[in-house]
View (cartoon, rainbow, N blue to C red):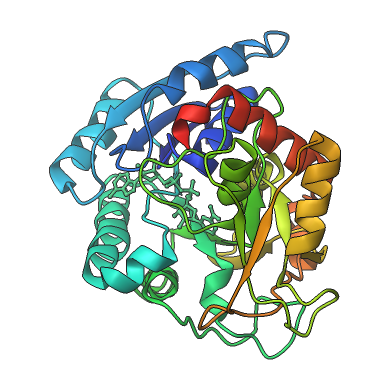
Length: 350
Ligand SMILES: NC(=O)c1ccc[n+]([C@@H]2O[C@H](COP(=O)([O-])OP(=O)(O)OC[C@H]3O[C@@H](n4cnc5c(N)ncnc54)[C@H](O)[C@@H]3O)[C@@H](O)[C@H]2O)c1
């Protein structure tokens, strides 16, 4: 298994995944419509991978297209086979990810995330590509009854974005894994990826809007926003602000490489794994850490709690540690330091 198609590979997580794969010697074909990214990121990935010259790095190619375009997907799979580089596995990250936008435009999210994924999976099977890693999200759990959240907890998304993720998980399980006992799939449910590559060259860029906390901290740090809105100060948590499980994006990226390694050796056809650190961090703790490591003030304004918000979301990641032999290596200070380095270098993206 050496030729990997990464959908959404120009995006925040996908660019880090692509880099991790190249460093491990995989050949990577990135497939992205660039609806929320730019192809210019590929040059940076290439530069960063060349920094690892002591090892043999993989080759990178790029296809600009939409996963809903079946003909173009067909072409990509056929072209690679024709060159003797048959795609052996797909890491599927392409998708729209704004919870707020999904509430306003649920059909757009369904079409892009669900119909696009089904198109991709059908094309994979048509080309005998039987290994899939899918980017899912902790949002599938909705309001869990307790934390830490284990993979077998009830799934009950509370917004259209989360519903699209759960639908794709179910489609993989019910339609593709059951009908084709050759397809192996690892579903990765991410918790809260933040930070950037330590070089500061790649990170989270937003073409449109972001409702995530960390990009908004960066905007305030860059003085593109006057203050950070913090929603609610009376949650039943350590300091009244919501608690999340933040994970460094490079650790998350390495989790995808570990999932590929697992699939090479195991026969399991469908596996769901949480990817988080299991460390609780409140918003105020995150801000304090950011301010102290980067020596910069983040003015705050407390707002009313957002409807549908959850006080604490924390992963039980024991299964991923055990099965993938993977664990996070970076701490909150690394996330804050690397994220800020990226924002300073690439402030146009904010
Ligand atoms: N960032 C997070 O906090 C987070 C948390 C949980 C899950 N996820 C999931 O991880 C995946 C990657 O997230 P990200 O943060 O890197 O987002 P991102 O927006 O930075 O990257 C997604 C990429 O997919 C591309 N894309 C979107 N629709 C496409 C389509 N129809 N065809 C081809 N390309 C398309 C975008 O241009 C973008 O480059 C997404 O599926 C997201 O839902 C993200």
